[in-house]
Length: 306
Image (cartoon, rainbow, N blue to C red):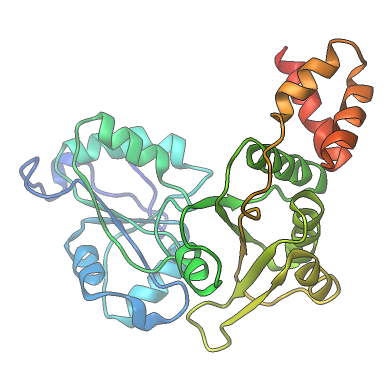
């Protein structure tokens, strides 16, 4: 296999640029981002299917998932695995193929590409190469959950997945709490694995307080459900019985009129001038009410930076 070859789902390769069908640069997008259903297959739009049929190569996270979807619609096209583990390696070769006129479509297993899915590096590289990038919009779990949550739809902040482990997750929530104390007031949207939903809700409750939230699962599917309540209520509900299916967490903004506190980083830096890192973290945690582990984790990061 040469450096210009890219492995396909069957273990073969895509034809190199001089053998592939060409288009005049600029007449059609070199790369199309195409949304796929997040559950209900009826949400696969005619324009999405047309874009895939017109492409010479479809880049996808899992060729089995995308292949099954396309087979239902009688579509046969070259599928190439494109995921977090090979995106950096494949991107330069794909850009060269695009420069040669090959048309690509990028899909994720479900929803809009790049939304907590691979593709950002490729899109950024295509833009920097002066290539045309376009999109066929469609289903998206984050926006669907936001609209169904009953919480303020704007402004909102999409956070993707929280860290899987407790310490880093609490540190990340601590950063959010610090931003809110500095004035951020937005509805927060997270993706989460169902088996971690209870722990994530508990950490969010500890770090952000008893504010309104919603857990949406199985969106657009038969057993779609949106459970609404405060963060502590949701944490208690899902502590012992994890939700089933894909999960989106939506957390309401801080209550209006709450006075912003000093920036967490500024407080830590000031405290660390006269205290040990551990004592500074404990002092700031006590002053702000933030989780001690989260404040300590942030203090460690500032210590490394400084």
